[in-house]
Length: 106
Image (spheres, rainbow, N blue to C red):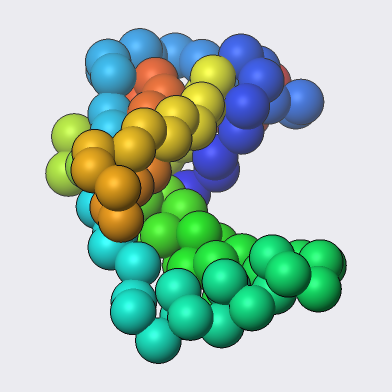
């Protein structure tokens, strides 16, 4: 499955536009990680625990979007975008969406 943020794929043409597909996940922070993050805010630097959590969340959301596109018969998703929203103090949603299409060689 080709996933791109652009509206075209070099060497291919869109022969069918299927529609919007999406994937999301909602993750809560872990108390133990919050303690480590709190200490990190005192000394400064990257909070690796949260970086890893967000990367895993993005990957899961992309996987769900791809599954949605495959179920509709697409072989690519173009114009892919990410959005993050905070639902409560310790939970965030990662949403990824794009347009499912069928590509053929140019």
